[in-house]
Length: 184
Length: 274
Image (cartoon, helix red, strand yellow):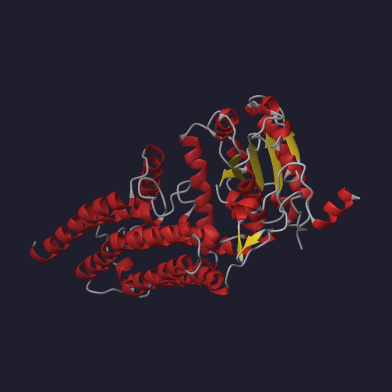
């Protein structure tokens, strides 16, 4: 039978999420999809629906409020999937690094495949990044990648799990075993 | 024999129309656009994706929507009864709506709701269309309608009413509030993924075939007029899609019912008395 993997390369559908960005990178992403740079010639559609997309484009230094949604969107995407961090903030935290409300880049929460630098990342770089991401997508398996540092043990009060408190803060140990190791 | 092949390859013909439409829309916006076979690449990719099943009914209703539509297209190609085809098409839409209501997602519910409201707008026009063809040809049989000469001049107002419902069925601006891409993330199709989304995606292609086959009925036995109608309406719909914004769902039903219904009734009254 013919190999289905090569068709992944031909129709990457994008999910774009703004994790507290200043809208600079978002506008550059929209510029990529607009007539001048025309990402649709690679078969890219901006779906806006995590269940039907392949590439996860994230902008912004993950703010404290947006991190749960980031991880939730990531887990809702079916395998195989690729994560692209667009912009300096998303890669490292950028100028917002070490601020009290910022989590210093998405790679503390989900595995990232392509980093695109720049403030704001230029459309040419974004196109390069997406083409690179498409190559990675072809070699991926359907094995489920777990987002690391995802959830701590749910603290339930009267049997109701409070989802707001389940996401981790930066630097907090993930599981009970990690806690034990840290204490040792 | 040729009908048999047409029925088997109906989704592929629909996919080609959809692919060509994406290229045409890109060219209208002065960009290159995806390759012609892009819908088939999407389809082959979706086979390979992981599929989430929320509940069995949701997935099965999606598949039933696709196959019922295929039967509708087969009915029209074989020249069966037009009224049967229209009611069977209604059934296929109802499967999709039931699928939309069978999950807990709010977007899916809104989409299914809007689909129902849009159905109120376009379904009377489709039925009046069948009645109009009956009054001209004395039969609902599509084979007979195809044998007779073109009836577009006596059904001109119904033809205009039919033009208003094409954007609703093909999910085009200005009447794409049922799907509303980034606003309610696709409406009923929001919870479908992988292989099951593929059936919804291919059902969209069959919708193209259904609408354009209905359009061809206006041409009667004239192949030339049929081609002219197809090309003209195809260009017009895409031009409209590129140049208009989305209207709200309550405006949609007001516009389509006021224009479509009044035009349709006027035409039917005219056929009786003139």
